[in-house]
Image (tube, rainbow, N blue to C red; front, side, top):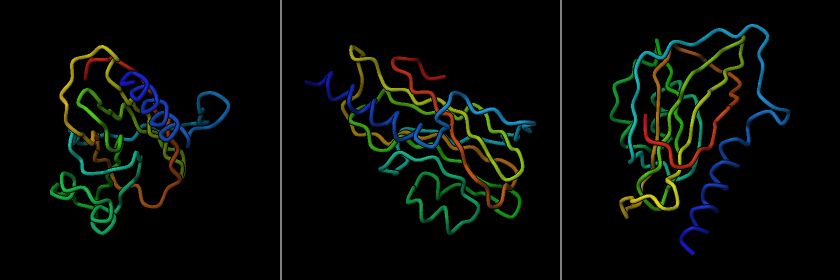
Length: 158
């Protein structure tokens, strides 16, 4: 039963996070520009209850996200944006997220990342978690967000 719950959770997570990705293979931008990652915030307790990938451009958007862990960060939104990859509420430890790169072409921003679920036989903590990874980047302004989030199982956190 527990293995079925993990498999179902992983499937739902993957479908939710990858839902914004293009349907025909990997997204290829004509001339993408890498976006510099200036700093990173990561952890197991974001307080964000549903899976999401978002670009945050203001303090009010950050407060609306409802993450005490991220709201405490001192981000200069006049010069920076925050990109958040959150896995939502999970039933145990062993889940983690990582934004691996960000690319931009015009007003399209593509967030590449990894969402990990623990292996079925992994020893994990028995506590609810809300894993996340967030990166501070130069200000993006209003953009169209696309995601390429790989869903993996049983990988060690990087």
